[in-house]
Length: 232
Image 1 (cartoon, one colour):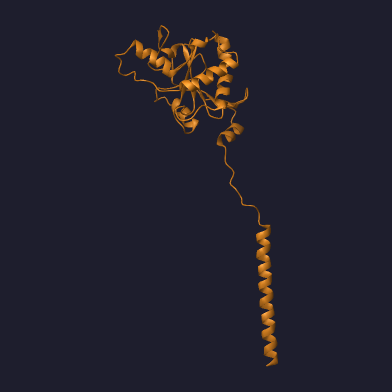
Image 2 (cartoon, one colour):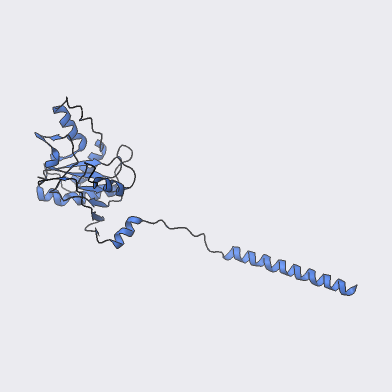
């Protein structure tokens, strides 16, 4: 009987010791476990910049060149600049892909993303398809003598970012200075469409163009003025 009691006590001690050891191990694991691992956000644009020779940073913002086939024959006079917004709130990459699609009769010279990244689709001297039914001053077919800048996003929903405006100034400065573009010829798509519709009220295909808002246009103009790029 005494032997059995000793065995029972021994087993009890062993079981108790095992429980204590297990509890201690669990506590130790809880106390020293690593912090929750968070999957880092992958900036695919940044990854592309690191591996692609197409990306450059001539100023504050990144620039890449994606040639669009959607251009007219001939040479742009570069007498003015038309400001647009894409009206698309998704990825700028998809906008650029669309503007470079030969089956889509639309293009521009540059798309400026919300972080200031510029996608240059054509040199200023190229005639792109951004203006449509248009008139400015006494001239029609604005595509032939003005370049088109597309700001990524919809200014009816949210304003341009400071990065977009700064990047636009960075892009426009050498063009304005080289071609001596006057302040009167830095306009919006809505302005050139309204001028066309006023002169051609019977053209039902030239529906009103809602584009970059007057408030955002004024912000860009103020930035140009601060940069001493408004020439009157």
